[in-house]
Length: 344
Ligand code: SF4
Image (cartoon, rainbow, N blue to C red; front, top):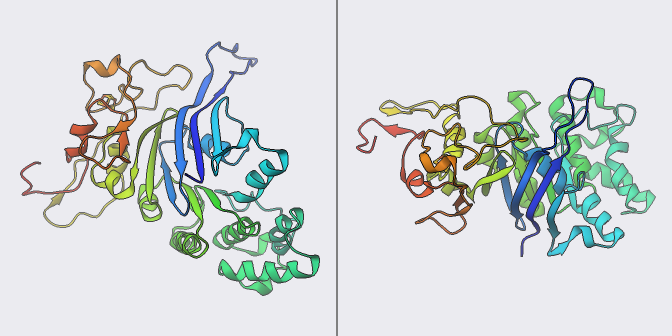
């Protein structure tokens, strides 16, 4: 049984009527029928371009948005059917979010010690006389000086504030951290330190993670499994090495081929260039939603909707929604090759 499981989850928004445009009848399909799971102590990397539905999915997992349809299960129990106290325990304690912008997620008028203590106080996890000690332990655990608990956010760098955000999340003893672009607002020089901290905490505390990032190099470094989303749907899902080495969906292949790489002598890389923008989630194309941008599209892609299913010859966990997934997973398109490679 997975720790977290989403089944058939949809999040559709009604279009707003504004001064400049009438509301349309078709909804915005931000998340459109997603099955997704996270196992105990597993990190799942969620990738895709802006607007593909990753952040909406993260907000649904954290209970910040309710799905329009579908089920969210925690430890096998449906969250929407839980007693209010159990639902609050799951959504306010056991699932915690680490945000992209550490400045925006902390109150500038409160010391970092007060911010870290907030969850402990709200959930009455410790008697008052033990909270300060616990806050100091948490600050030390994330690599900050425990004696700086009385300082305010403006006295810290971005990397240090992200560590405070992580300490704040850990304070309520979560089981799942949802990290939404946790290093993209930080200087390149401190990104690796924060990523290594998250990896260490995952190991030491047995945490599960959903890790959202634009940078697929970072996602590879962090994740056990990769899930690719396009236009509100999951288009590929599999263990990290399988997805990176034998990518089964042309969209994932395009994202991976865009990772900046230094090529060794004798190596070459023909990148898969993604032309244009994703279609509107209000009026997605018929057939395969990716067919308007796909380098491998054939006639049937414009009419037949592909289903997310295991790729022949691959571990059963490696699935893609592409009519040609078998062929794509065996090709070398968008991957680094040696010039002498006969399949090039
Ligand atoms: Fe491309 Fe067709 Fe596969 Fe869609 S089904 S990803 S259009 S090859």
